[in-house]
Length: 405
Image: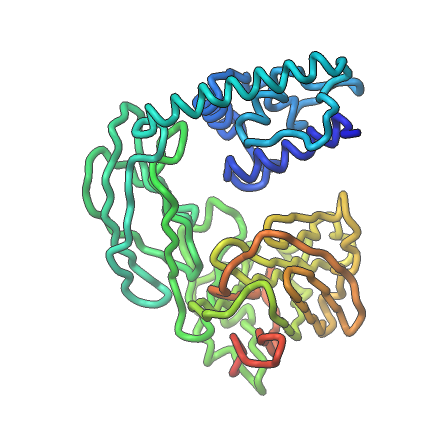
């Protein structure tokens, strides 16, 4: 028998996936407003923002809280999900359960019919396309776009947390990417996306080093670190003096990041990543030292966060569509001494992940949705850190991305 909380959890996952606004635990009020709009648009059933927040656990509810049947029906219709068991969502008799299924099917037929008739108004009708890119870190990308017929304000989200680029009519534009990455570019309105998502690669010439301030409001400037000045005996380390020489205020919390972005043509669902690294531990502004390792694919990423002792609360991990923290999961194997060299190995065998720290297995997990081909890799430090090697290779030991310091 399908339990109601099991169905609710299933619907949460499916709605998060279809809505495609990132992890649901990070949704803000505007995300719930957009979700309410989409559900009403697709199902003709209105679910209030308050109800959605209760359903997703964003507001405190009574211990015996159960979503109303209309809420479950509307969300099921929105994502196209029906329980495989013949037991209805709530403890009603079989006749009422069957009646509910009939009603949902009838509504679905009505909605599909109306969506077909009004597809030009409901589907994203704007477009954005990439004309060309120029340079590698930094990169300028050139776009052309067409806008849909709408009265709502429109803007382009370039995927790099930069300011909105407002638009009112068809045209062309350029955008400056100050740091490397694989970015999702979308034409948006206040209520929904107005175009399909465009993927843009801002690549590098082999490894590239940058520094920036940890505080989001200070990220208008990214400082290029001359790597040749920071490599000794095959080890990369940007000291405070190195950073001060390029204009960085080392009294602030600074992030030092090494990136290598290119279209590798190799699968992100089967690879081996090894790295030897350590943090500095004498950065007065830093309370929690952290090292983040990322392998970025076309459709997702694998990301590990290592922290110093006492900061295990901030351990995090992303495996494709799966996300983990140290509140609901045991990630204590990612708590390391920043003064010591750490040997890390990540093995991905067909979406099954094993992570080793100093040759000890500390985590095993999996994901289901392919992240596509590998488009880049990075390692970053709160404060600064040393990197002795970073190697990404196929399971049969062929090189994908390696250091050559």
